[in-house]
Image (cartoon, rainbow, N blue to C red):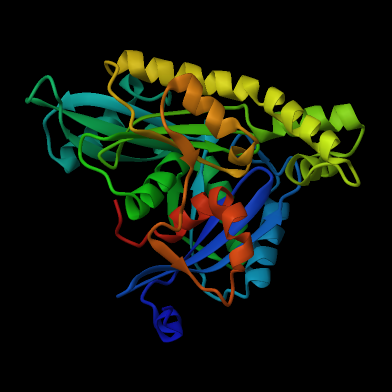
Length: 360
């Protein structure tokens, strides 16, 4: 049973805000002695062109939209967790000699050119996670290095500041769904799960072993490619085509909408093929380890028959990610009738909302 007193007095003071290329999604997750509760979830559209390939192109519009979503959510909390994605982020796994964290930070800064495509690390925000001892050489360790240009990070921070919000944590999109997975799913140290986030402009793939990322890849092909094809086919605006993609044709027969679903699935085939190539590459690079499951997130993950197609093609169980396996929700703020439809859409925002200061 949901204890509203614990929601009000919950220790967690952060709100997750997922900035996509087509919408903003806010999730307020309360963590207390009984677990995690989604207290609020709000989504608003973002005009096309504000975010392009993960790069902020219109700071003023994003700032206004951030104000709007906090106002709509009636959420007074100012500490925000958000993330960046796409070409604005470099994620690389490297193998190095064993050393402590201080030595590793200096090494990455001084010899970044060996690992990252940046000439001057003073212009870059970077962090790393030591994964542990290398499987083939005990004198070496595997490390995930994450980096983004300061000018890109700062552009997002400026938009939040102008909106009156403070960014406490700037995460990286592939790792956000890893947080959600760790919270909701049971796994052992050897299990491999692939989490695929199909957004509007970018599809992100994160291979997780024992709860830790071992391979990531983004590619610039996602839901917008389908929307644009529908826009051309039906001679409608982008916004109208987006609505058709989600809700079907207005005043259409059952047969017409079935044909539409089949057309949408056909338009999704290039995305599927790129997913297949990425997973084939992972399998060849990492020795063909068994994949337990594929979990789909993002608004375009709900495309009719997509999960079934990937499951049959890749011979791996594939389904939509479920943020509510171990996370409850406030029935006063969230309509249970909408729960099924928001699962893949809200996944990243909820993953952000689960973060707390001090997490690594």
